[in-house]
Length: 412
Ligand code: CTP
Image (cartoon, rainbow, N blue to C red; front, top):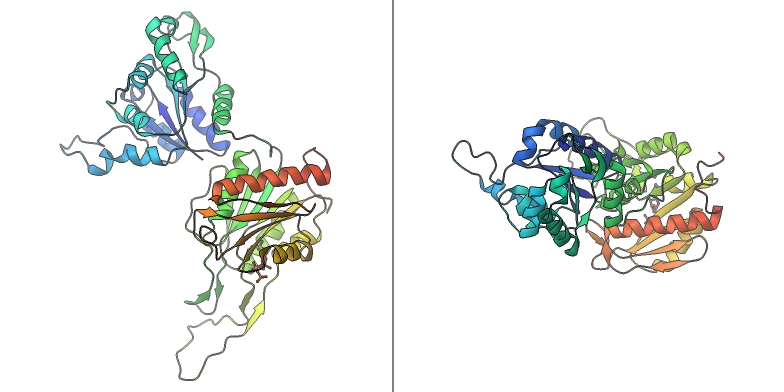
């Protein structure tokens, strides 16, 4: 999930640097926006280095050369669209007043108006400024509008006074963010191994056999699991996707390498979710040189690859093992067959011919077939929502199969 962190001008601006780290460790990706005031206290470079992303400072980009650039001028709209939550920490009396009154005179204030994402504000200022009727009225106005305000803490303030005005602690700010986004940490202590994407099986140095998997479903599950507190290892075939925050990615190309990467890491995992579209067959022979064109028909012999899901599920012990089934007909029948044939605990089945489901789409329509007999047919939803529902079902299964206590590793 993407958080835009607005940093405004106060002594507490340096604390926002630690907050970036914390949010990333918790599985959020963070885009920092700094106001002019904030840049008096901390340099954008600090935040760029920590977040690994360009820090946004100006509404019109760097216009020192006389020309504002169009890309920057509409960037607030693009950022607004890709933000799941706007967090402002520390928030000065000035930014709170501007938000309350709808003044849009820089990037952050314009973003606030342009975004429909939920907003969390963590004020930090001098105690008298905080207690001033103007500030309190503005804060009330924001609360009434649905903005979540994380009240400042009491204590010694940079100005030498004692009272309310210190930026709330990281734990309180992150808890407010989680509450607003409704992300719970019910996978704390779990290690989740996920496979995603296609595999490529080489015929010669320039040709290979692959499939249309984009990896989006597996990556969505990886992102959601990290947000819910799990340590996530993502064994990924070649895809065009960013590694979700807090996730360790292992890149592989072939079914053989994917099998090897999974085998090396499976022992430490308590949950395995095999979402990759692994090639069922690979060429028997991989030519060292390019195959030359000829007039005779060309036959390529293929041999089966190892079924990684079946291998993992064979000795699973307490581990919860989840597989996917891409079907074009008799979805329920085939999925239930797969569940028992592969000894899995859960099969996520979809009819890839249905509109809004399957390859390279942002939505999916799936049914979850569980080992305890439950079938859960979900309506069309985004792949991130599907990911959450898969994890909900895993958490439910974990308690049905092994009791409510988080199961760590299997006995093997
Ligand atoms: N799988 C795997 N290793 C393979 C093949 C498949 O781990 N070599 C996993 C996939 O990641 C997925 C599930 O098995 O979780 C898909 O099962 P599979 O039997 O390959 O089904 P489909 O390819 O969907 O269909 P079918 O067998 O009907 O061709």
